[in-house]
Image 1 (spheres, rainbow, N blue to C red):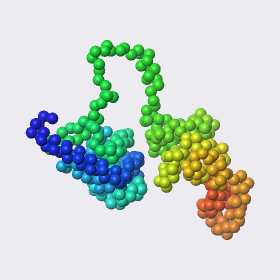
Image 2: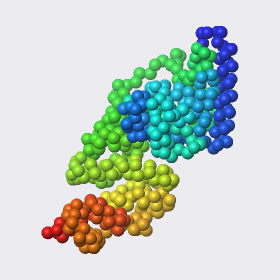
Image 3: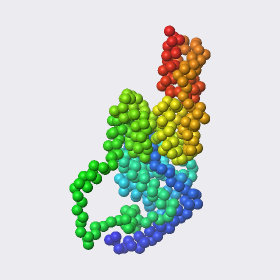
Image 4: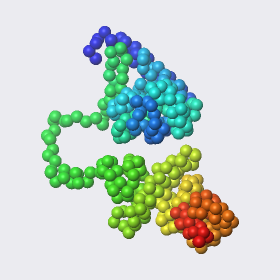
Length: 396
């Protein structure tokens, strides 16, 4: 701080900032506010006209019961959202947007509404979004915002701040503490053996970009799914399931079978479970073994892929229940091929005129009829094959 004539303003504005942060804390605590987890929302802005979001990765964060407070002034020209933006900028993004100020900056009201619906935000909630061309930068920045938002519910965080030319201040870095280390001038340097350095280098964790490339190569995943699971906390579980299924490139499975299996596992871990969470299913109660058991049932053809969501829902409600018991209770144990043939025959015979009129074009409409009857007790691919064969035999 070189401008001594600003000291009076700096002190006054800092007192105001801290008092306003404490008022915001009190309101957040009264509202029982909490902070969600970061979510990628790029799909909502895939065709945006906003030049600040166009062709970039976009991540969002739901702030439950923060409405009206993110835009709350804490210093002249600075709001609580400015504090969030300070932390995001330190990770490399240009800034943040929040729903207290949207629609704006080329972001339309329709996009804003879609964002709120996607995150299941209510009227009392706020949402923060940020964007960058680099997905890693986005993730680091949105998590920094998440931590600062959580700190807002506790009061004034301890941190080192930089004075601005108008007497206000902005976040600079964490406050030095016991964990911050400096070279000790009174202790002689310790020589680290080359062998130790080489051993450490040989056992460094896999870089996320390298993991993503490996998933594309070994499991034939597309870029989106490979990135999604490589960056996920479920990546090790994904690999465990693929080993159980023999889904590595040196297995007996064909390339198409490896790709189909990997795609299904990723979509289950990253999509199905997330959808169940949005439906207020307590998926956090699912154990690793619960999930593995469900995949084992699919691999052994005890259940079909279509039955997985409902079985996971059941196990989330009762994690001590065995997966095969849940499948039996829900009626998702696979039909034998003979039982499936009987159902398909009945459906086709009951709609012979339709089949003769549509030919093989009847497969699509009748698939829905059959799948509704079997309720996930047969794999969709097998159903299609049996139905197609039956229709061809009728037409001949």
